[in-house]
Amino acid sequence: MKATPNITVLMPAYNAEKYIREAIESVLLQTYTDFELLIVNDGSTDGTVAIINSFKDDRIVLINQSNKGVANALNTGLKYARAPYIARFDADDVCYPYRLEKQIRFLHDNPEYILIGSEAKYIIENGDFLFDFHCIAYSHEQIMDKLYFYCPFVHPTVMYKKENVINAGGYPTHAHNFEDYLLWTNLVNEGHFCNLTEPLIKYRLNSSSVTIDEKWRGRRFRELKREIVLRGSITAAEGNELLAIIKDQDIQKIKEGAYNALCGKKFLTDNHQPERARDYFNKAIKIYPLRLENYLLYLLSYFPESLVAWLHKLSPNKL
Image (cartoon, rainbow, N blue to C red):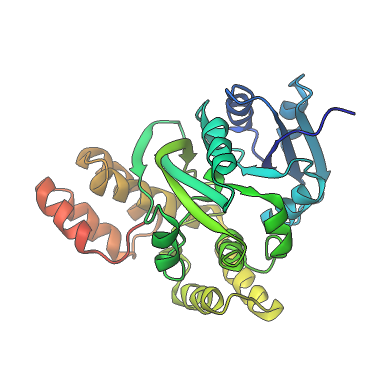
């Protein structure tokens, strides 16, 4: 058997044939090489497995399971991961070559830290740059100050100590779409957190993703999520209610509407390209013509950049 690696790159995958080759290649090109890439195929029905098997690198480990959702797939990965450090990564994102090297060096040099994230460059479906994501907090103190108000980490940027996550119970499977956020709150007594002040991945927004702007989920979803995060736990009944809301919206029309609206907003407010923003708002309006916000943002795209920036700064509902 191969020697135990120092890092397990944990990648859940479900119907990811469009992007997973680029994601895998970006992991295999890391400057830090003592890792295994553990891919949990969560019941894909497309060509995902064939693409994974086309790689002939013995650092790749494939686990197949029936479709059970991302939290279950991650817990399966934690069960089979051989390394003491876990680097989370998604099957549609791209790692910068130095990602693992920088994070493992920090954790080795600072043993009181158990989890480290980073900034990210957001890209759209075709890989074009969308905007630079800046973390809401960087130091442990800043993160703890904001943890119960906003999720401080971009999930596929994080590296953490496996032992501490196991101690905290792993990913809560009922916390649909925020299993990572609830896990972070359960880790507060395990050690320190931080974010690096540089992007280590390209984070891809795509319309087939299960993650959409939560404003599209509705008030009840947001209120319930808030209650759960503050409490630090979730019941099966709450999980079923969350899942029912998600399933009601699990249609391509809603996902495409949310994707186009979000891309339009970011091209307007974070990467000021008003003409490109209007193209996305037009698509969102055609999909959901009764959503007033998209008309307002479309009109705002004709205002001066300075005014757009000022209004965006005042908005309480940033990504």
